[in-house]
Amino acid sequence: MNDDEPKSAAELKEIRLNRKLAQDAEGIKAMADIAAADVAIRKRTAHLRALRLAKEAADGDKPAEPKPKKKKSLK
Image (tube, rainbow, N blue to C red):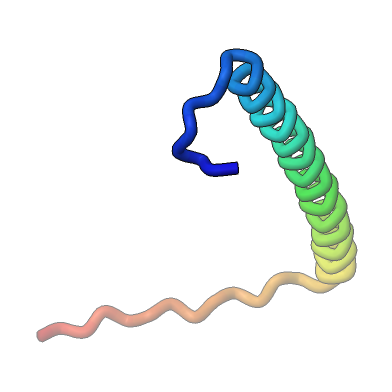
C-alpha cells in the first residue's frame, strides 16, 4: 500500500481511531510511570527523614559545639 494514495473516509476514520487509542494507551502508561516515581520519592523522603530524626535524637544528648567566630580583618 502506497502512502501517497488518497484514502477513503472509512480508512481515515480507522487511522484516526487507532492513533487516538495509541495516544490513550501512552497517556495511561505515562501516568503510571509518574505515579510510580512519586511513590519512590515519598519512600525515599520518609527514609531520609527517619535517618535525620534518629541522628538529631542522638546528637541531642550532646551539646552543640559553638562555631568559632571569624575575626574581621582591617585592610
